[in-house]
Image: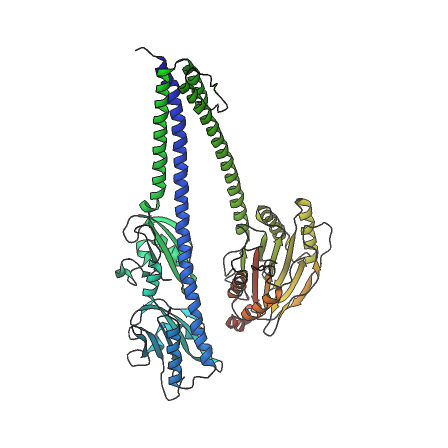
Length: 639
């Protein structure tokens, strides 16, 4: 068979050009598919967190109602059943988000002549419906919503149940004990109907057939498309891996079988801490990937059309012009081999060939530009993500995250939180035993933020842990760490540090302050900063002297450490949070467990900042000394 010039032109130019264009289109379609799929996955995660946060916000708000009822009753202004019932009816009328509310007094608590008294109002079709729960067929003293908070002495959410003889519906109850003369007097409750949670969860639209379901802390379904499984089935029985994660209160994403229709699905889940619940968003996989597949098909179709157009142009030029074909074929081969710098001369005998050469030159320029942009973007993104992930792993692996940190040590309770201003930050905290009695505590703040601050934090923490000892005076040890930081790093960064040793047997406390905000000591009668010698931050300059301060704390006293991200937090009006507000919050939460103290302070800072982005890293740590192990019963009660 005779090989013509046009055949050679098609073979040498058309095939290589088609391959190059096909590879570019195929690569672009794969990247687009992956990007859209990742965006859909992130949208599922965001939807789960958003839906859980919406329900949790509602539950957190209504938690205050029974506590308000209890405080009002403790004033003694309701001295008759009529006043109590009228007050309770108004509570239900003015709070449409709750299903019902009850005030259940202890035996003979409301009236010495009345064995039991528990007025209850719940929402009916025409308004609040009254029900007296103190009746022969409803012994409310044995129900969990009364018994558990009475025995524990604290407010809590119940496991979902069907309130037969009361509200006559499936519900969850938040119960708050109230007192008279410092003694238990009764329980105030609010009820949330499961049907209300179903409306909340069903309001979210997830594709065409996706859905949201909620499980209790025991794993039982509270909302589910198949209503027969509500309170009758457990997520553990359908998907044990998903059930374990949701019951543990974790946030995450899982590709698994649809619990309802047994099909491939994307499942994002998030906890609802206020009620001990967990919410999951189920997105069918075929719907989740529909946009990604559509975009991939469009790109492939566009590539096919481009290939067809390119081949047609080559055949047309081959039949109408032969001289420039050899040059064009050679050029196409060079481009296919990776020479994107090649440019063709546009001096051709026909306008069509000149246009083809111009188009070829434009294609090589555009392809070169796109390849350069792609290489640069990929390099920058991979480097940034690698540094970010490495720094985040370093930071979060170096601070304790599991509480209680020392289950076998009843002498104290400790809890800490770290909230970086970015994905990573420069704050640090730690606590560990030096020997059987001495506990080391430290908290610090590196100057700056981001990856350099996280790495400097890691170096500082490593040096401190390696140098910590009771055999060397604390001031000398801190001075040694300062010299090591100055010698090993030349970044110009420094770290403020509060370093302390606590004898868990005697309550003796020794601490050294290197340019850090003074911690607070919370006693039964006072909240005050621990004033002592304050030295220069570590790493600022070598050969400095440091000093330590020793005090004695009492059983039940609490130490609160923090970084300057707390008092220097800014609201939208550029006002500082200030230590004065921190002292007020510490006074309010001083009697709470240490975990609630730290979370209460961080929550108040977030409330103060509002919608403004966090300006600095925030770290807080609280330790309550309960006394020696053989005499800590009083401290444990307080906690």
